[in-house]
Image (cartoon, rainbow, N blue to C red; front, side):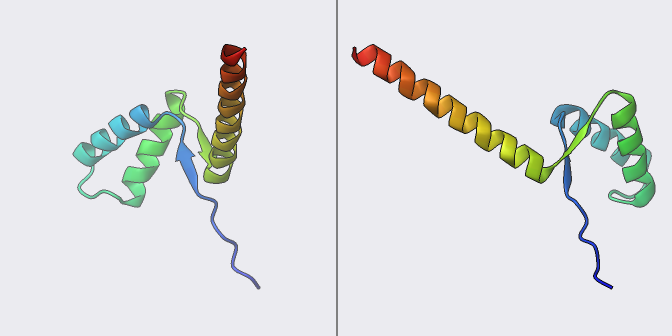
Length: 81
């Protein structure tokens, strides 16, 4: 059997996640640990935080960068006229 590769997910609200990690470090003796990570994850989700896969974020950023580049190109073209 092949070992399944874990999907890397990242928090979409980095400020909230960082604040919860600080709280978890104060609340638990060891970070990272399973109980501390679980607590931080649960608190993050309860407070409306969402996770996305790194691939989703990468493709979204690429799409946004392409859009911004095309908008800038159109703007420059318009300014030259």
